[in-house]
Length: 637
Image (tube, rainbow, N blue to C red; front, side, top):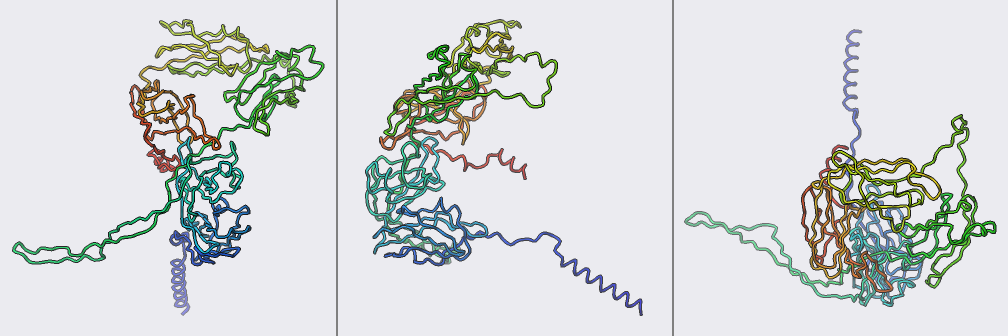
């Protein structure tokens, strides 16, 4: 009996264990299908497109909980108010509260763009727009178009497009616009339900959010002419195919013949088009005109730095103050002036040791700056400069050899590697101004019959940077060279000498290069052609100027992929010029050739560039992955 009971107990225990094991979830819980359904509007209070609106708020109800994404950036109320409307989230509904008085007999639009998304997966409602009127009727006209950055030829996201019924030039500087819209990622904009009228249209990068244009500070774009709204009837014919096909059959001597007897239905649709909706606004940064001193510094004992707000031909004069210096230092010859390549920074190298050995200097700087009337006037400013030598590291024990002074050398940067391009020069840059007499100690040697032989070369001084020189020489292909400067061959105005410099290099073969020949046609202005690489961060490699139609050759190019853009140099000054709103001056046009030029060694590629054509530049951020990208993506999985 006991044995029977024990066997039965074991049998039941095994069955229970199997049931528990089978029911247990041994893996991770699997979720259901991803929610891709956007929220839906189920009620609007009052309804969109209502008239005679007198309230202070509107409520928009949804079929699920929602959230607001970047609502402050995306929400636009048009016409705009001085005190912006407040958008708040209330679970399954959104409330818009007006904090300013609404204008009478005015149609308003509340554009949420894609800011309303569901609470779980972030599915956007879509581009939702709510419309109401404070009068008995709704305005129905609309305008639309695209905003493009003139220099990059790419769409501008988030630009504020403003429409003015008062068409005076100065109005955008002082008054709110009649209507506003914002651009999407494609640079497209659309303003609806506006009055039938004539408008001045412009776009700005409204970082301040006040709908006001600040000349030379705000990125801007404008349309030269005034825009008149239009409407016209449009008729479209649609073909509707039947849901079922009727086939008729009959017997003939040849057998059965079949014929389709059901017919398509032609439907006519009549509606009204509003516009124009193909407006084009080129956007640009105006040339900054406010000139002022941004910073002054003494980063090195022997140098004073002056940084200005914009590049300009600065008239800078600096006079030392302090009675102890006046008798010993010449006020006309105590520094050497050096300008940066961007012309916005001026460095003064102090020549006199009586001056730079003083830790605290007081000087009077006279320079140009822009006054409140926009004119440039000469200003005298007293400036204090401080410099203190860095202390020795603490805890450093002095050894016997520390009593031997360490020789400090002047630093030299020689822009040459192990190989040299046949069309390039060697750039020599010193960390201090030098005494030019020492330049005669620079040697260039060429390998001739297995012997390094000195050759003559030309040394050119940079026009702005007094410490930079260019070594020019007509290089021979596939030849070994040596650049040599003996120790203590060159010295600075502060008595520092150079350490020995030896650079061995070899020039490339002619066959290592390819050429790109560009055939320019239909040019009505001088053209600046730029050869570049890169998408977002463009690096201009070479630049050529041509007065009209003709061939432009980019030579001595390495193997690789290149792109070309053209600047229509309207005024022929050899550079791209921006525009100016108040002067009604558009920026010079830039065209990007959409063709990637793949160049191989020892090959020539010929490319046509028609200046009369309109070219659309592909947005690099939206470019599909290349095969290389796909391989990397697979490798990273």
